[in-house]
Length: 328
Image 1 (cartoon, rainbow, N blue to C red):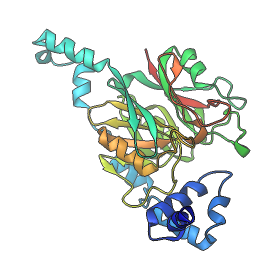
Image 2: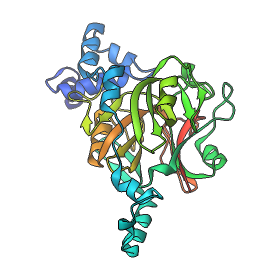
Image 3: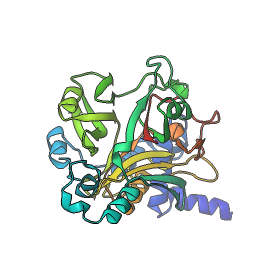
Image 4: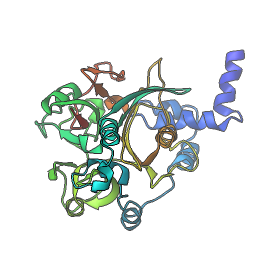
């Protein structure tokens, strides 16, 4: 009786947050939407999904306005070879700053419904995009992609065609720009670009690939939603509309540090995180801009010789079309 009463309180009682979390989690899976539909009407599900949807509709014009790349003065004053001579007065201070710039920190994350990892990369020039060398055929496992590019760490990036959850990662769903060259995508189609420009600034902008190249984007994929824009969280109410699940995200602090995030999900040790959870984590660690990447069973992080999270696919980590990597 107690269990029945408790379940009734969750599904039909006054605790709307839990009910909305249940519905949004079920409705953003490929094969478990029935878990919401057996309990609630389609009209109620639509209402809840709309309530939790990220409300900020960002047009191309507005997005370009708000994501004018910030001058990363702290990092650039250290990194640039033409730094003013005045900054070299104290060589010990300079050496210390260079050592700080070279650091990559692995941070363990734990919330009420999730565990995960955050890589904080002090030098943004070390973060770049890798992609499969068998485009249209098959993706590459993250471990192999890291080795192929002589990197030492990375996370999955863009999405791929995945009918029935049986895709092989060879056909991206959006676009790929690698080393200032278009690897995949339609030149004149608009994409929600997530990538770095030549000055190592993370740019979030709704652009065509032609516009992206004109803007100096060196490495990018397209995905959504954006979570933090110019220091402000985009999700103002609700959980983001995607419920709990495995998540991958990327962000950058105002002084240039890159944040690479993975959250495990759909497992006993970690149910998963909402998009609002991911936004809050990024803000907690100082993200000035941050965006969601492909999650679910694709979520994976490789660091110093091994996969460090636990992908939820029963077959282990998946074949990927692209990944954000860290140079040695």
